[in-house]
Length: 305
Length: 279
Image (cartoon, rainbow over all chains, first blue to last red; front, top):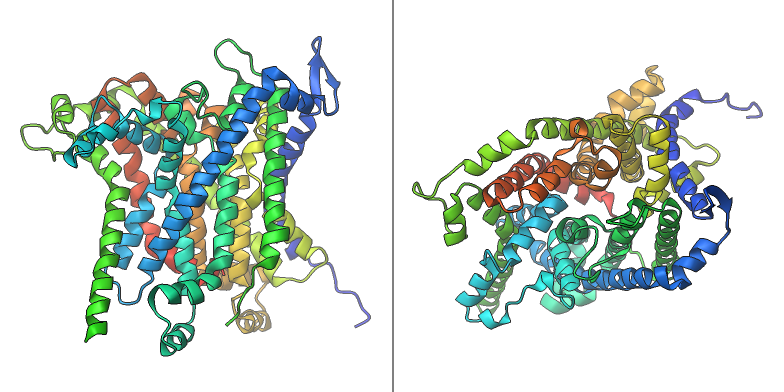
């Protein structure tokens, strides 16, 4: 066919609305934020300062302490999710997908319910349960004779962040569970039957046959957890306020960004430093995603049936 | 025989673990709902007891309905969630159809560009979004929220839906073309009805974060007339922090709508997920 096809208008019509909204509301502001981080105010005028804002953020004692604290807390927050949320999610999914399990639909629906609740509900209900005043948690520990273990976990610098991370794990464990469950269901019966014929059952069947097959799904979950955690804000804000107390022990990048941009108490909001923090977060997420895409994902083996 | 007994023991253990975790998952919801129907004294006396005729009290709900304008907040949340959902599904499905059906120059690149938003959270653009909304006078309107949530939901919607649309039989579409249907008719009449489970999956994944979002309502639309229920209950709880009846009732009211929506969609959700969204 030497003749060129006529321009297909419908392709443009199908693509245009999504492309327009996405570009205007997401991509342009994102670029705007990156751009804003390169400027600062000098005697009331906006001047280009290059990377000076980043130097301030990473090196100036007034900023860097808070930044590295938030980054460290965020890394710990992520680590708790990887070590607690994802193994529990895999365990639950493995149990749910066992054949002839009764009430599987009920368990699946019930365990996913915390995920649909808003952070306002989750943050506040755990605050109530863990509160020494109301006494549900101390009362329950008392019932099993462990009352001495109780402490106001959310109020202590040493334990507040871990407690909140575990609350967040409680809330989101449904997501890895659902995705791993779907991946386990997609393993063909023939593969499992062949394993059973060879006498590979139970735990060794899971470890040797199923686990390699669901590794790509685990990879996706890890990266979703990473992006979600380094973007977290709501749970901390709802339960500990924008100051992320006690004494900034639960401050993560999201709350740090919010405080910097909008100000708090006596400190005024600073859009330029806010944009600088947002850009730093953007960089961290980008580096994490790239590490995943180029080193981990390429080594995962995919099997097609 | 021994294997049969073995598998019974195994199944009991599986049920045990699942029941234990289900209790952990539902316990806080149970605590809120039960205590929101009790009198103040009963809440403190025995937080885990079910309400009895002696302790049953609706004072919390009365306070909430008198003090906060929860009906308005609820309506705002509905408008924002359903509006964004409509645009995400419509625009997302259209773009997904274009990407999966037609081969044109830049197709893969376009797919990649649209998928970028899955990895990079829209929140990082907040600074510039706020400036843009201020400049266009959209601050404190529900329109601002609908726009932001539409942009936020589109990447995942396009990604999931185009995976599914690749699975719609070409023969069917070509039969439609031979019968003289336009590309638009093929999309709306043939393809859309076939990807309904995928649309439900996308709907759940889009709807829940929108309904529960605190960040954008707090920043873009904090005025009394445009508060969503999530922001409204957050503010209400902040003000009534010592009135436990009211707080628990507000939490109860915030849980119910999203729970109902989830139970409606949950059957479709698992079908959609298992049909290939993560393969």
